[in-house]
Length: 285
Image (cartoon, rainbow, N blue to C red):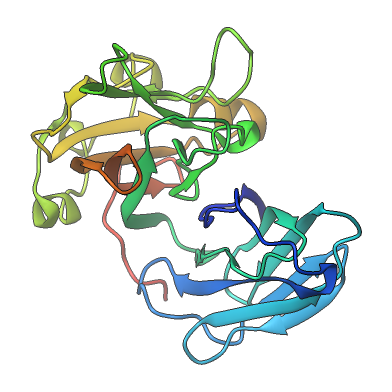
């Protein structure tokens, strides 16, 4: 199974020094989604360049001396290893930029429940803002990553104080994927959320009645954290069919970063890819 992603993590590239096309490079780190440990010997393939490398014992990789044919170019990174879902990242590389970073979470191909904590999402400033979330792969993404945009962070009143999480689908543009949400489930600290095994007493989900909203409750900055919501990836079901995909969101923190001059929302995320009302991660056998 190959999953297409649009750059889950990206360092700033607005002021790249274009020293030479042959100096372009991209690197990062690969970790296991369950163990949160480095994945060594994962294959990293850059196309259309064709360069291949492997992660080291610490999960790190780097591909250098990329010949970008002009001032910038479009590339794809394929990250694969037996036992994991292969992922495909779209990467836009600027000539001379050796600092581009793509960190990757690999998911076990037979596992049912996945989690990713401390996902940082930023207030929308422009089309390259990491203000959206891919709730299938549990990573933040650029706002223009329409084909994988399940959820958007938005300032609800334009005041920089009140925010909410909205469906990734935008009615005006017709872009993004539609996601449905529960009402507020409750307030859970990190350990409580980690142990949250199911919603609604564990009965099978009813997608229509259990997930009636196109956004979460609003929350303020600074926020009373620990708010938890459930979600159903309605748009993914329309594209990929069964099984339906359900997940959990915990708002771990909301703060203003003066260095970035932007609001940051920190999320803990879980997803069940098998259509079940179960959110406890177990080790695959």
